[in-house]
Length: 410
Image 1 (cartoon, helix red, strand yellow):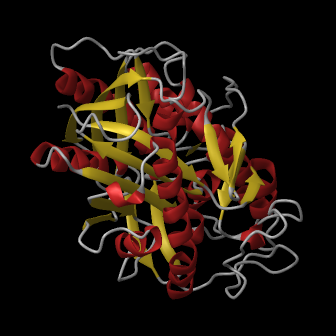
Image 2: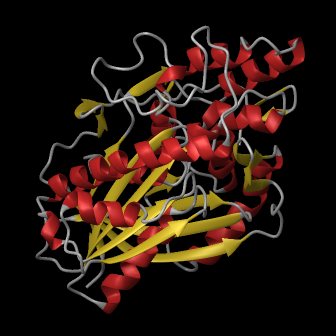
């Protein structure tokens, strides 16, 4: 039997910051000169993002964190009361990851189990994914403990793969179910990207600050048709491609004041040049997918994919909608988009879905999925926000200019 995603659950931190407020926070730092302020405005305004969630409640305004929400960053200072941003050490940032990430792992996993109508005791394997923090025993161990899973559950962690990592996570789950048809695999991606933002005049750091956000998502994968709700998303096949260039254009390293993300202006251009060849090699003689899930590293990446594959302007609506509503949550973002399509009644049963995600290397991860049926839950995109579910706003197609003053939003 073909492995399928039975359900997807999502979770985000309670603090929600609108893009305009985030822009003014960075532009208003006391050491920002005139040119840097222009670059900040250009990058933030070109990102096609309206709001993002963060574990850093100190970066939010008075109404950005709901009353009573758990604040994990109280002991670590990221900003003064007047908004001046500080520079915590990498150790301090990782301490906050250890404090805040397990809750998102658990919330996303429980949301997926609930949507699948599945008890936690059914899980046989756990795959966790993250590139924004480290600890051991790690998030795979914590999920076994927090969900009350069997201590004999097999556990795997995929670390430091970057934005493309959800695809290898799903691919690993598909491989497990192919070897063990009765396996039920829980895949959970959690990224706390905003832990590593900092005030900077470096255009690449400005771009990173303008797009990255925090969130978690979980998928239940099985090849057993009797497990969970019927339908879902069939996982037909996967592929990995290394582009001929880009090794130094998307880079993720560890510095003394957080993890340092390099997103050069060449990233969307490389994607635009390489995407047709990568997709043609993946699809072969197959017909083009009916719709697409493309990791929104930034608005310009989506634009380049749309142009490079000659897609209909509506083909990436779900990807653009998640970028607008949540920002770039690294590996978790693809699962947010897949959940939107899973519950979208406009995506018909039997529809073929092409998936693309981009990571350091430059690596292109591809997937081909099939819509197997509408889940029994409501056919609307829902995201778990501060312990409650909220309907996401409708999509729109508004865009802004890609490049201002030489800054490309990657």
